[in-house]
Length: 254
Image (cartoon, rainbow, N blue to C red; front, side):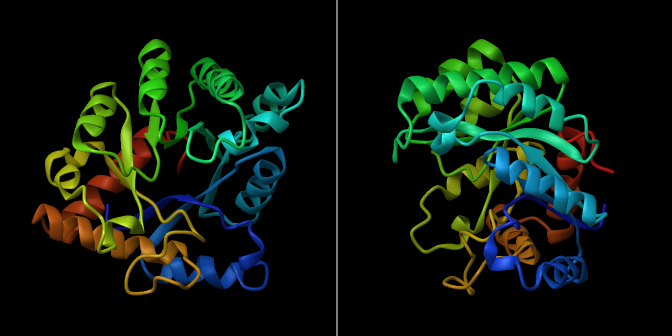
């Protein structure tokens, strides 16, 4: 496959309200032929579906981020399940655990995360996982419920990468790997390319040399080039394999 996929973006934010079509066209011109727009709560999940329905090369996910776990009302899971009937929904999430900000209590975060894992297993959809300073509890839940999915914006150490890939999960890298203070190059060197995907997390984490500006899906190519450099592999091999990995995990992609 000779094109890239941005497997994680938030292009529903106001930063894109005036030029979303141009942003998507610029990505396509840069050989990024699929973009996944990731919901983080009920409102942004609906917005992600709306954008995916509007653009043929955009797909989406629906779910509840740990920051928003305490805001989920009774019936939220049924609403997510109903959204999944749309065939442009390729995964559940972004969900997971975040003990850095703790916008929601740990117990509520874990409950909402497990709810969505169980739904993803029931619907045979992968799950998009957020993890920040919660390795121990996250691994405990993953070992117990064994979802298919990806740890997005992976920035953990090699041991954590080995633990999650051993469970069959993929890990996805962002523009963080281009930053001077990125200190987990061993993860990229050691983890098999079959377990890796690429993402921008737009509008966040803009890679060097554009750091400080709004991130866009077209910049996923910079991440591919950086991984090729770190792994000492041809860029085409990175493009081919990471795209295959995305199609295999997100089986509704087409």
